[in-house]
Length: 311
Image (cartoon, rainbow, N blue to C red; front, side, top):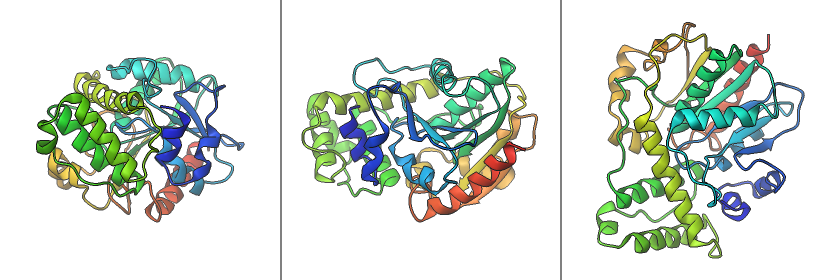
């Protein structure tokens, strides 16, 4: 997406300053300065890294922070629908900043599975992963199948909720049933109108850019559905940051979280790591854990693990 649409999906108005024509569009230097090893983080299915800006703000001022946006979000290149391909290209991008490990990786929601695949590929290339921060997401194992929105109309309805929860912007809720009676073009136009009304984007944003955002989410869901990593134990230090409150989409779409929460505190991530998986409870829910005031505690705890990873 353009600078305009990315900058409007965030609270700090200075976010657009981090994006320029000289950057690889998928690697966004949210807070590039500092002498510590950089932290690279993959966003959820929406693909935009703008909602990470508050997390970066509350980390140590000496902590570099880069976001990894989804491919296709610029509205020009096609989105990718294989997790392995997304991870491979993200690795190429981060190695332009940091050629060698240890790598500090993280991922929120759907991005957690991309970040895991990045860590898996890096370890298979004999690169060290210092930490993999999982922000409130289940692992890619059979016990956690991906439940997708069925149809374009359901996808848009889901996106409205996710944008509202991850940005703090109030949007008019739209039911999938109401959208189903409209054509695909009408649904896209209606979605844009709701974003404009809520102040999420400006009226000048091209409808094709909005469609690109929808296509990215659709492709990400396909990628998650197709992803079946080799069941193995990898030497990846994992920290699972669990949101304390139940998120309505999590409760509705993935009851497996609740089944595992009482029997396995790691939600099954211990099945993919040869190292102990640490679990850290943080305030907020799956959507607003990255927003003030909850993000202050999250940043404090994340920084502790990042600093430990350098020792």
